[in-house]
Length: 419
Image 1 (cartoon, rainbow, N blue to C red):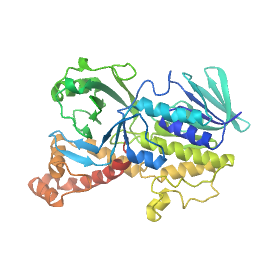
Image 2 (tube, rainbow, N blue to C red):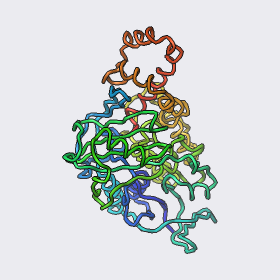
Image 3 (spheres, rainbow, N blue to C red):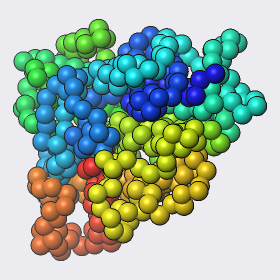
């Protein structure tokens, strides 16, 4: 009988396993991939603030520093999200966190899919196909975007029909006609329905990818030919030997409830993917941290207090204090505390989810005007005089002023937690 079983070893599951093993608990972890991190399902970027919030050190999986993100409109003008970070080997990040968990005492099993869980006499039984593989007092569900175990514990998972397909290629810098910058660029255009193209610089390689509901490969191939002057067939193998990578991404916001008695849902399984950038590594790692705190309390080795390094805990006033859970009753059951503290975060609010989707409802003309207004400035530096000038020249857009301010509000959360 293990103290904790963790299903999935992405950043969220890996972080939960690491923190619980560090606390001295017996942890068993499973990953359905042949090896943790392989294949890749990511654009491969991470903000520095994610490491600060989780007190996790940068490793050799970080390839190159970048100054921040830019959202590029169809006319090429941009809005900045100037939160610095790294271009990373995503498989390297996943493996490093999971390897650290193993070094701390976690028993890990790769290439093994948990297909069923049952609960009896206060513990979980875990099965792969029809064979029981473990028993555990507590369960962390980090199985990824397609729900299976989530629904078996009585919670609602991501809607399978509402997952967004993503696809990524890699090109040598010398093979493309494209400026090498120190930014991650996101190209928004209605032709990429409900999504965008991303271009992430690495040392001598560009990651070029897409999320869209109207044909990912078609849109990505078009961008490569028309904007980078490169034949898609010139893409190179990634570090794991694949010509492309990608997968499905939650896009409708968090699931309604994050936990039930003795079971905690983290990362993509919980729908914790930013609605604008579709990035989920940062908030996945945070959810793994919070799940570990709740479980330690349940098992008697910790208290329901977020770590001092966690998000906003240096701020002792207003909503920041509440976001850290300081006002949550100390006698709450662990799983209720976990559910409530996640629901207090700015990145799980329904208001944020709704605001984030607004930018994808705009037509090309309006997107271009936003680009003209900001013209490379950071989202927080809205030139009001320029905005009013554009509205005067385009009076039909005046009713949209409120929508633009909501988009600005969503970018504030995205700048910190969006990648």
